[in-house]
Length: 272
Image: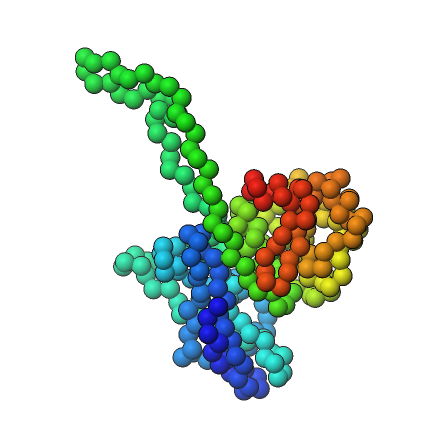
């Protein structure tokens, strides 16, 4: 994590220490939003989906992606302050073209396109000379995912962001979370094509009703249901999740989700 810098609250003028978060690029290297400490921070009065993300370029591979906008809560008055970030400069004289919204930055790189022989097409023959025999080409080896880089969980919003990053790391595309700051006493929905997930940031274990609700939501949307909890699960909730095939994950404050049942282990092994 980067060194802490002072950020002055525009409401009460108190200075708060802030360290920019570190996120994992698809290439496996850490990415940190470049803070603009010469610009004044501004108070966050209304949260929108667009303003919650900022474009950042990986210095190692040049990949551009969207990451959560840096913000800090004032320890004196409670105001949420947005920390300014330097805008992206055009790379090599080419206008900045960001990748698709936050979803795809954690997707593993695609394998190279198959050769003509792997598609069953016979390569051209030289005149007067028979071409080599064409047989089935071996399948391309699976591209391994880079190691997941956790984000320290301090607030309910951190838990939601961590779950979203983890789902993208698993291969789910276009993971979306609702506008507004998560309420600590309520679970938060995350949605993506083919996915319905719930994140429970409370300090009580998730119960049977919560697991059945996320299963019904997934059934209605014809999607995979996944549950994340900070405090774990009751015994009947785990048993019901095993019966329904719902992957259960538990998150600790280091920000690393851990599978707690066989469906979750299978999801981690196979990906989305």
